[in-house]
Amino acid sequence: MIVLDGVTPPSGGTGCLHSVPWFTARLGGALTELTLSGRDLTLPEVLSRAIRRTADAHADTCDLSHPRTPQATVVLARWDAASVEYLVLSDSALLVRGADGAVTPVLDDRLARLPRAALATDALVDANLRNKEGGFFTAAADPAVAARAVTGSLPRREVRALAALTDGATRWTEEFREGDWTALLDVVAKEGARSLVERVRELETADREQRAFLGRGKTHDDATVVYAEL
Image (cartoon, rainbow, N blue to C red; front, top):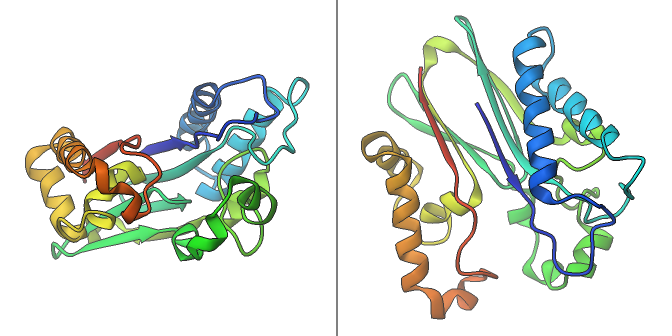
């Protein structure tokens, strides 16, 4: 299971000739190949090699040291008969339903823990917070960032289902408070991923005029959901 959410850069350039979709396609392709062929690799090692491979593809033409170089959030999950491995980097989420039905969110909450004042301007974020100690981390051009991810492993028998979601989909719980993580996963399991996204879109549209008060910079955000029953 692989979910990437490309980080849309603010105006002002990225130091790169390529788009965010180009970057996520390259990174996603490398992750897909490495998670399957590199069964001896841990998920952080998989992510590190995928970032390096993607960086090598445009290092000669682009300034990869630019803080806004194309980047993405990452959720990975891989399982076999014995175990379920997972990795989360930045503000996408992984929900795990256990054999007892309980739902546990796996979150990298570093961005959410930053004070809003610290996120006041793009320049401040770029200089002090983006892929910096004390800030937050994304998959960009530095393979070492893989060590910053939230990772773990569970016995396969203890996992009933998984859902990977970008932050545009987790708004249903995190921003609109329509239900907790268990309720969100129930919507996906019973009605499908499309239903959750449609619910979020309805809430965003109805709340268009109030979004500034909730701290959202835009009405809509990319919403992706991948669901698997094990």
